[in-house]
Length: 179
Image (cartoon, rainbow, N blue to C red; front, side):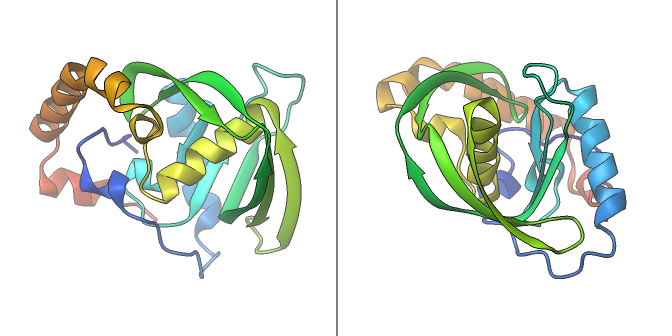
């Protein structure tokens, strides 16, 4: 799988709800592999060209946990508190921005088996969930900063977009839609 970059219209699309869970294990394994290859801590399905409300997260190298997380059909149902933290994004390489987000979230989701859960999250895992949920709703970190900050990275964004369009033809894109 290839991580699509800023400028690709798939990153601005609100992803479809997962209704068929049968192919998810293979897709999730591929997403984790891609995320690790890119040295990320989270990856949304639309970042690899798949129109599904699905994300994978692994913050185990930064916090004391060995858990990986797969969230299907996730939705933030409540949030409170404020936290500002520098974020990067695999789809916007080498751009890091201070992003203000809620410190705590209540998150409703399904497991890879379709079981429904609702939990509260905070810290890096809570932030990663919010970042990936934004992706699944067509929102990028550049949408979470002031117009002045956005202008400061405008040149980088144009370069990423130009490079993305040169590397990916429609034929290549279809080959990355593996389910």
